[in-house]
Image (cartoon, rainbow, N blue to C red; front, side, top):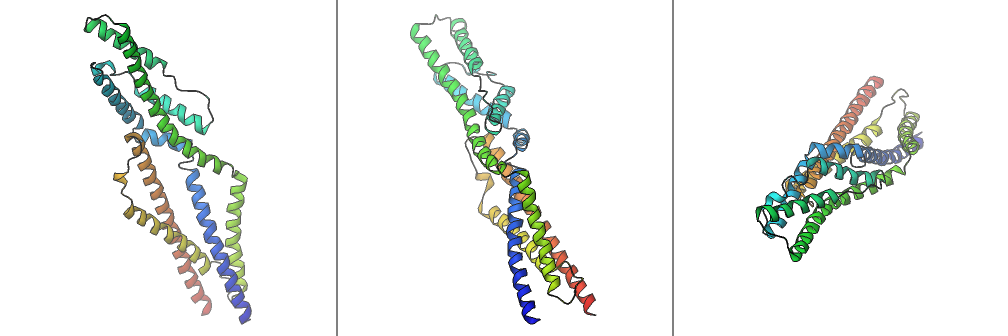
Length: 287
């Protein structure tokens, strides 16, 4: 009897370790699939953090820099791009990597409008005829500005590419396989109960300390990791590519941390409740 009890404890301990791993994997997959691996989530984050407005302002400021360097008034580029244009092109980049869209950003309207504005400015306001050399200079300036816009779109595209790569790897895990993984986790929970009940005198105690240990371990680990990250990482100091991208990424990090923290608290609380219930039931059956 004593040998059987020891064997049951060893089996329960091993199953508890397995359950901890399964809970961590399940939590990670669920969190990733509902955040950075979700196109809809990214779209909401872009709107929430005013990405389009911030990016439009940043790009326009860079346009003004190039124009002023060429001794032209910066009103040549005011309103050259709109928030709607930035939004449409950003979503084109998003669709390119998440949906394998082949549609490319159209920069010709920017090129044509800017060329027209500069020609009008030089000919009408400065009362100058445009020489062949000036035409070449204007063409060069327009190319630089248009390339600047294209590069800005490619920058956010690089971020989408990185996230979509992870998303595609997770997508290879079919929904059926995820359900099976969750089923295995549930089976492990039930198996721990069976083994525990088989090795104890109190056959009616289904919830036990091993369930509590698994939940409290994962919960506590999650809470500690989030606290450590909050102490070690200064989110306000993060700067990635542009202000718009930084705002989105910082907010995503905050959201993931909050979700993990809440998950950790819930798991730890449930484990604690199970532990209390188990002790109450144990006292009841020992009377």
